[in-house]
Each structure stands twice: as C-alpha cells, then as structure tokens.
Amino acid sequence: MTTTRAAAILLAKELRLEFRTRELLSATIVFSLVIVVLFSFAFDPTAAESRRYGPGLLWIAFLFAGSLMLNPSFAREQSNDTLDALRMAPISPFAILSAKMLANFIFMSLVELVLVPVFGVLYNVSLSGVAGRLILVLVLGTIGLTVTGTVFSAISSHARMRELLLPLLLLPILTPLLIAAVEATASLLVDQPELDRTWVALLAGFDIVFLTASWLLCDYLIEE
Image 1 (cartoon, helix red, strand yellow):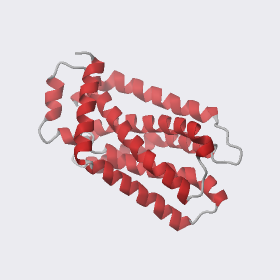
Image 2 (cartoon, rainbow, N blue to C red):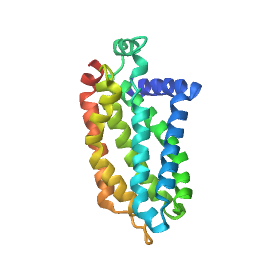
Image 3 (tube, rainbow, N blue to C red):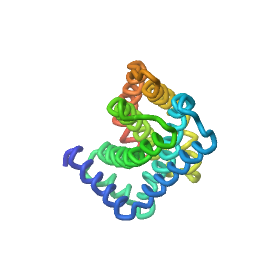
C-alpha cells in the first residue's frame, strides 16, 4: 500500500472518530472563545489598540487551543495498543504521522474558522479587505503549529506526565513561528495593510524544516 493511500485511510479514521463525538473539537472551540472574550473584556481595547495588541492575543488563543487539541493525538492509541498494531501493518511510519498531522490541521482550521470572525467583531477589526492574505498567514502558521505539535505529541505520548511535558517541549520551539505569525498578522491590521514577505518566508521556512525533519525521523518517532 502506498504512503498516500495509507495516510488517506488513517485520516478518514481520525476524522470519523472525532466527528462522531466532537468532544475534543467542541471543547477546544469553547475554550478558545472564552479566551478571546475574556481578553476583550479585560483590555476593552480601542480600535488602535486592537490593531496593536490583537494579533498577539489571537495567536495566544490559537496556541492554547493547539496545546489542548494536540495533546491527545497519540493518547487515543494507547488504550487498546492501536499504535502497536499500526506499526506492524505494512505501511510507512510517515503515513501514520502525516495522517495525524492532517487531522490536527483540519481540526485547528475549524477552530480558526469560528474564532477569527468573533475576534473581528469583539475587537472592532475589519478583516474583509485582507481576508486572502490573512488566510495565507493562518495556513502557514497552522501548518507549523500542527506539524510541530504532532511530532512532540508522539515524543511525549509514553511519558507519565505528558499533559505537562508537551507544552514544555513545544513552547520554546514555536517561539520563532509565533513571532513571525504575530508580525505578519499585525502588518495586515494597520491602516494601509501590506503583507511583510520576510515574515511569510520565515513561516514557510519553519514549515519546510519541520516537515522535512518529521519525514526523516518518522521511523524513530513512531517506534519510540
């Protein structure tokens, strides 16, 4: 079986399991909305302050949502030794890892689809004129977040305190990505929006580096 076909089958399984209960997705959306609403009431920003502080608050919400969503990526496979069965199947280990990454990317994109319009309303920020460029930034940032989070979720899945270990491993690695994502988003919320290509290039480079590393190290990640 090819890697692409195996990944597609495993991705369908991941989506079917989550959409059957929607427990993780619903909890993440509610959690993210609470963060954005609390920030709005706590700071009560003006339009100028929203453009200045809003991007950072938005990506903090994405980071918290990702930490909540990515943590159980491989925990589901522990109860019935499903991961051991997948490792014995005649498929590439990268198919297993890439299916998890794609599933997490889809789930995070759904969270962002709900969160971004709410952010625009609460913080009085117009996003209609920059929607296409903002989607590009969100896609690049979400790819980096989900790829890195899935990799470290695999690393920490066997740890006794994996709920605490994942954020400790993830946050330092994601710092360059978050800085680039916040700066790129902020450049779109000014009076004369213009997407800074330097930050976009940094986001794309981060994604390429970690995607390549996950492909090269997938055997060790899944085996361990």
